[in-house]
Amino acid sequence: MRQYRYLIAIVAVLRLQTAVAQESGATRQNVQACVNGLSYACDKMRLSGDERAQVDAADHRRNVSSCMNGLTYSCDKQQLSREELAQVSAAEYRRNISNCMNGLSYSCDKSQLSSEVSAQVRDAEYRRNVSSCLNGLSYSCDKSRLSTDESAQVRAADYRRNLNNCLNGLAYSCDKSRLSTDESAQVSAADYRRNFNNCLNGLSYSCDKSRLNGAESAETGASEKRRMVDKALLSSEARTRSRVAELAPPTLVDPARGACEENGSCAGDVSPLTGRQKTVDVHGYYRKDGTYVRGHYRSPPRRK
Image 1 (tube, rainbow, N blue to C red):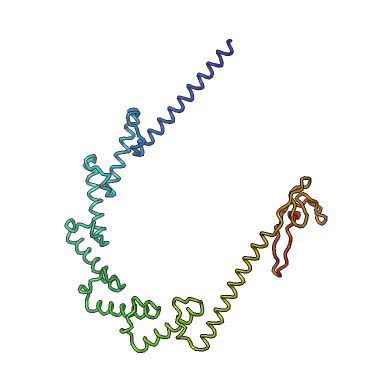
Image 2: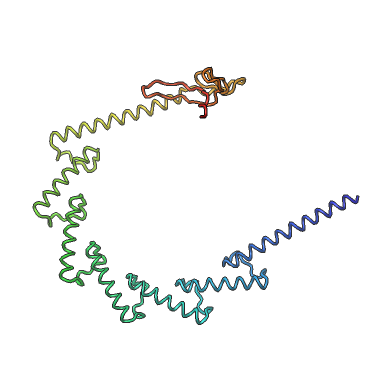
């Protein structure tokens, strides 16, 4: 009876220790959630005085960081000190300058810029416009702002870009009326080579056989025949593999010897050549000469 009461007491103590451990774990998880700003998993009513102070400090640091990085949706400036407000204002000023310098008009307030910074922003806008015009970005190029020399450079870049597009067969951005006689000849030769290459490679959607001469037509015909033969061989090989898989006898199981393969060798047999047990299962396969090797078991290679 005394032993029974002793066991009951031990069980009660263990249950109490488990409950305390669970409660302690839940408390730590709640504190961690509050410190990390996870409001959906934080119950501030369960925090002690010290824990609430830690959470308030973490919330304040997070708010300062949001304000410094311009995250207005999570920044409450009313919670900032005078010194922190000054730091945030300086960060906003620097961010506005950066936005204006990089042409981010949706987040640039030029009224906040000094005369010196405004001049730098205008210079950056000018350089950006010249670059857009030189690279053919018509949606962000204002040619009326270019100097005479810059206009000449842009026209030369447009001309080179048009020639390159014509040589590469980009019909949607090629204006052949702008080409010289020699350039038109080069483009025609490039078109001819591209058409012949497309026909050789079976690209029927971009091949015009009526433009080929006799030798090219013969070469294209031979290429088509080779493709057809290759396709037929691949199809035949696939059918053969499928048929072999269907006809291959299943792995046999000898109750006394274990799994056996097509040639009758079984797992665990002793090889007369090596004197070791056959434990490596080799499935049936075809040699390069077309000979079929039946599945078999062999002994593993000797370790060096």
